[in-house]
Length: 309
Image (cartoon, rainbow, N blue to C red):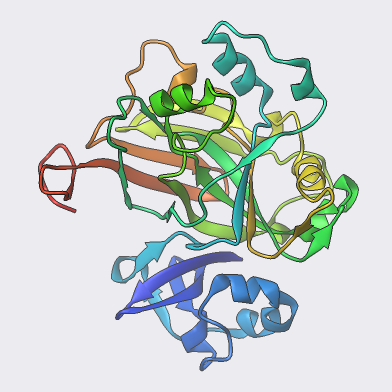
């Protein structure tokens, strides 16, 4: 199933995308199914049979506002799992890949309270001149677990979604010279969506997902890769994340950037500016679109066309 979070008639609730329409689960179940998707994930075995029976309360996409599937996830851990991205990004700075990268998958915690959804305007941070997108795939934890083995991890994955780990490259470069971070280079926005697709729609018996990934800026293709190119599998990421720590339903595990999946890796490309449209597409997960904005002199969001948003 493809889960969403949406607003209609001033009410926000979780839903499923089916036959090009959205079914609101809270309304369709007469309030039995929670409106919050994290609560549904926590007790999914209880709600799944009822969800599969929901037929009423459907809406056309043009009549609703889509949010990120998880507007307030429990946490966000973002890994660094694609070798091509690591080699290229470090090479741009004259650095080799450190041997430790091949020994353990590493991650940072992002800001789970700054999540954006489809068509949201992404405000470029003040003093940032090098705003970048990052094309990633993320999984969502579906049940509680600690010290999970990679071979068992598929039982803990609720589903997958597109993730855009927006990056202020100049702010990031400055702060990481101190040896800590990233923080201010990342904490202003992370986009998810449009769908959270349940894990049963994928073959998780194999080590890697075979899903084509693309990014477009103003309609021009900038990035192309595949999720199967991850050096570390999601099972290995979950094993590392859960070592001596309990993972809970609704936590997000990001893959890190696919090879070629950001402007930093490319030559001759300008960083993002207000008005630019970024579309990230992953096979079977849909397309996640956002427009870059900035604060004007009055503190309003605007694109380069001058319209307030």
